[in-house]
Length: 477
Image (cartoon, rainbow, N blue to C red; front, side, top):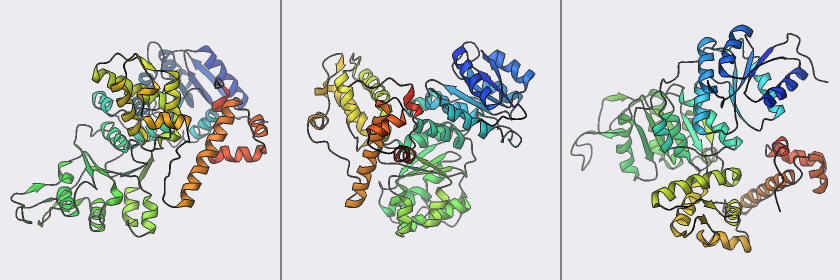
């Protein structure tokens, strides 16, 4: 039996859909909360003053005063009330704005009842201790952000958007480490952090640690004085100095030579460094964002990467999942790339045939999003009709559809690769069974010849929610 809340905490729900309001009333009345509703942003502002709610759930897309502007005005009047934003279609920009305008959290539809209950429990204790929301940037660099848009609406991507929004407003001394396989979009995350923060007008300096020889890399990073070495005919400012109060993005940080690892650690600790051949130090104000596609903790254990540097960089960690783990985003990404290259090549292409989309969804993408983009660009070039057909895709994709499936080999160590393949199979099997049975765990487990406990153990292992599949139409055979 649900424990009743004795003090009748007030929860304001703002949405122009009566069905949504009714659903929230049912959930919160069962929990013992007092549910207040509003059907517009204007009404919500009045209720915030008259009712003084403890928590607010608010839709972003509403006629008249939209959810984000209502959020901004609520925070201007009452910075401490937790506001949880809701949207039917979450984009990177919307999520970042919501967090920067002071949202407590950001949820996407369809809503999970358990998730709503969790959000209330998290929000209520924080009420007494929450601090005023810092003033956010007065204008949003939409023109720049559009060029570096992260595409995806899966839960994993929504969590990343929220992290970007939070990190972007921290002081520049907060370092960020972005991890993920090659082609997952790590530089896009770094640029999104930069262009979403107050220093968006400052330089964004990207440095690939594998692109330059060790001897040149030090000069490139720190700069050099005239005569410091053969060929140093004049004084040169380094990338760290040029960055000003902006962002320094160190890509493939795991390949940084050990001598430079020590010098970078000193920079992060003391926020100053010297040019090669110089004696005077200069101050560094920029934020450091590093990225790697290798396991840095494993590199630390093998003494190939400094542990103290790892912890200095690992203040905030953002992990980008591979495309094979967020396949629900493939139609969205494919559509985005189709529009991009159709406009660039000046072709009138409306979309993908059903068979083509099935091929795109089945492929494992060892090269991740970068590979998908290349596949779509090639398909647009060779397409002769209004729809992308299977023959426009790379031959290996169509060959795999009818022949032996090529499995992604992630390691030269047999045991590690086998473990990875088995985990992929377990996760895909559970997802397919839940899709087939509309989220009914009991039936899915029974048909799988598994105990319900073992089936749920796999769900927990891969963070799969049955609720996600209960409102989705069953896949057609």
